[in-house]
Image 1 (cartoon, helix red, strand yellow):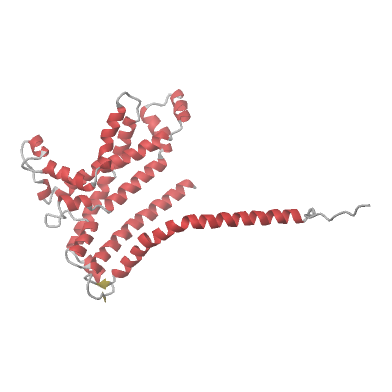
Image 2 (spheres, helix red, strand yellow):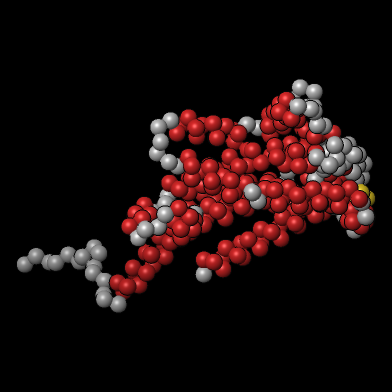
Length: 309
């Protein structure tokens, strides 16, 4: 009679099976978490080095008087006190508000153009390319184009009006002239966002609304705009942040002049740091601008979270 060999892997009891399954799930979850950490580590490191550290260092530097070469001197809140008593700061703040209000027009204009370009008409691709062109141009190129456009001696504006107007040389018009130039590429950017959003719209809802007799404004308000809510939110956020950090067109078209009448907070900070070697004062301006943007971003995030609930 042959002796029975013991089983290499004896069957587990009914009580041990759930415990083994739970341990296997924990090991799988741990492996996934480690993989996620390794994938996120480069992005987190880049954010720490290029975003969080500069923000923290700028806040730290705003409490010092430093010319960029000698040893920094701690002055506490003196930079902020000086900033609140500087007339140029309030001019820049007022100009930033003008930029902000004007840039609120970019999303509606971009939506209107996107609705027009979303039609299936022959030759629409060429029209889309023409509207898309401002977005691919750099701010320097846009600034040069509109500087020539506004030139009172040979610019297109003087030819249209029959006489020259020194738009960039008059403190009354310069800010609005630069804002008008900035709205050109910003509207194109919002148009691209809305065109992308329109491709994701549920066509079944549109067809059902048409069968119910919805047309025109009723269709737009009750069917299309609710589905474009995330895109609309993104367009307004990007436009407002772009208005608050406006710099390149001002640098190219007016350099903050005449007599600092067109300066904004971003250019004011650059001007103090580069021209006058006041790194600490410039950092205080940057921190103030960051605080204004942070208040708006937190407000919009809270509003978005409430709407999702």
